[in-house]
Length: 259
DNA sequence: ATGGTAGACCTTCTA
Image (tube, rainbow, N blue to C red; front, top):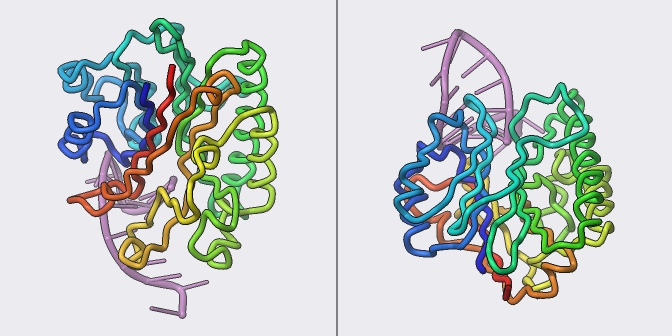
């Protein structure tokens, strides 16, 4: 089973590009982030024509996540527990059915910039809520994949120039510590476990020539439960997608599980 | 050097 995560930065602005990628790669499961539309405006029929079952947790203009699967999605849950007042659509979870079911979550973690505003504590609190929920999910002892745009640069080797990001929410010590706490519950960073090389970036800013200069960061991650990590065979970052027409600022990351 | 681009959408917010 191949499972992908991709922050598409508006699914409708990039529909042909996104559909073309799905036609050529044909992942079994995909987590999309920043679809930037409400559920009714998600191109559900276009994905169904490609053979996907669709679950959407959308929002007007901002955020929004979706799950696509070749097999039916069961036990769909929208939103992250721990704060009933949180209106932002950043979390969608379901069980991908099949002979070996896999629980999958599409995650769009808050950016958190600027760090001297309420956005940064919101990010840290959201990471704590995710950690609390992940603890509950891990207790199920199932194959589990938490995939998405975490807006976290885990290590210095995951950024072209750590000093350039020292004041950024994605690279704050508190951010990185909270991400480590999440992983230390017993989750495996699929890219690292698959011997991912340094410089495996997944995001290049649109500004300041970040792509031609390879000023990238690795912030899109697939975190696996032990029951999923046991079956990990490889992880591929689809870097070439960033060089295409009207690209998202993120590229897809695809993990293969021998399930 | 505090720049630069992209998307949604109502003039500015978010990233």
